[in-house]
Length: 290
Image 1 (cartoon, helix red, strand yellow):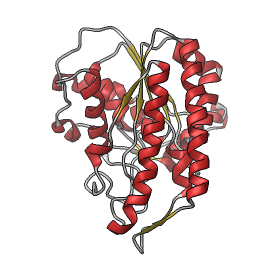
Image 2 (tube, one colour):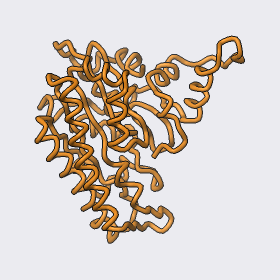
Image 3 (tube, one colour):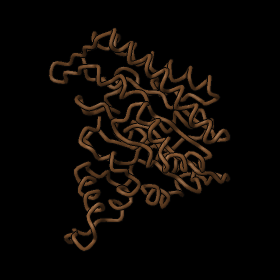
């Protein structure tokens, strides 16, 4: 997995004297999707670098997944095993229940949405998030569970279009925080680190995913809660392996699904490319990724 490469750079941070298994679950943010339809080093990978767990996985992190689909991942045989063996679990889930309802016109710089439809979706998030946390707790009541909040993903639109949509994201974060508190999990706020004008973290007006600097902000927001005083330095951004395009991941998955005797010879890959590809599920590369 990507951590194989990241651990090479472990001298960037002091080793943590704790043995643990870290599992990241959720949507494209947990998977590390970039603004350019790639999978790279996301906040979970950077946390694995900082915390240096004995084991780390983000195979339950799937771009485009709603909270309901994340529940399905947790309920799967592989998901149950992953949750049961984890000491630390981070969750990114909920944005895909809301953001598809928001129309973003990057050329005109405007946003629009139906308030009634959004409210209905947010109510569904509350119910599903409570169920997700309940299932995780039943599988592993001893795990330390952290629910990641969301940032405002439309910094390029005109200012007058930001407040109404920002409020919807605030409600989403409030729901996640409330359900986490009820379940004994910990909420990690990230919105203040991005603000409403975080174009340096969200460079693509037509895409809601952060760049590596944005993921670093998310990772350090987690550390503010998990290990106050510990931060990942910005210098790590210069040492991360290059992300891999979703189209290349699709080809890799198709090759994996083809019997070895039927496969055609492939071009050689660099170590960084191979490490980035491993650990990605088939669903992570489907073309409907958000």
